[in-house]
Amino acid sequence: MIGAGRPINLCGCKEDWSIKNITIRETAKNELSQILAIYPAAFPDEELRPVVSSLIKGTAEVLSLAAFHEGALIGHVVFTVFNGDDAGDKGAGALLGPLGVLPELQGQGIGSGLVQRGLERLDSQGTRQVFVLGDPKYYSRFGFRPERLMLPPYPLPQKWADAWQSLLLSNAAPLAAGHCLLPEEWMDRTLWLP
Ligand SMILES: CC(C)(COP(=O)(O)OP(=O)(O)OC[C@H]1O[C@@H](n2cnc3c(N)ncnc32)[C@H](O)[C@@H]1OP(=O)(O)O)[C@@H](O)C(=O)NCCC(=O)NCCS
Image (cartoon, rainbow, N blue to C red; front, side):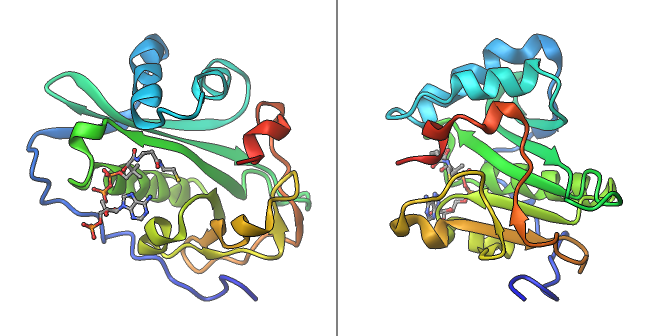
């Protein structure tokens, strides 16, 4: 089974950031404008502010983490927690994304720090499997591998087949095969198209 038995190194977070004094913490409600400023900078060709905004302001269960340097918000990630099909699978899955770091500060471990802190937090609260649609060259460093059993809400273009990936936390059992039961914020088909 894809992903089964792949332990994740939750201690692998790069701590030797070349920018010192970086704090990663959960965001507060009043930090939305700072969060939203990250996305046009990190994704000049995509408009991700509406989905980030609706995830943070809405009722979906999300983990919103940001990296700060000298009080400035320099990177952000959202994890959307969702239930598996079985009654006992409440909060068993999470979708990672979007993830963005200010362009001038990329390549210094900030993105990795955000992902690792998020994975640690989700693991501690009982999430079993984390999914992402992203570049396998980046996400494989955390142990994500192409996922074929639990599918995104909409079919993906063939060229993105390996970009849909998952990671099992703490050797947990994968969610039953099917489609991710994501909240309505993610049910906009254009979010799943190139
Ligand atoms: C992707 C992103 C979040 C990574 O954050 P970061 O702080 O730059 O990442 P880190 O410093 O932790 O890791 C940098 C490493 O990832 C690599 N990397 C960054 N983006 C990558 C990508 N899209 N594909 C492959 N490798 C990538 C860098 O080459 C670097 O490699 P190295 O450690 O071997 O030198 C950031 O570059 C970003 O915001 N990019 C634009 C938005 C984006 O693409 N988001 C992810 C969507 S899937």
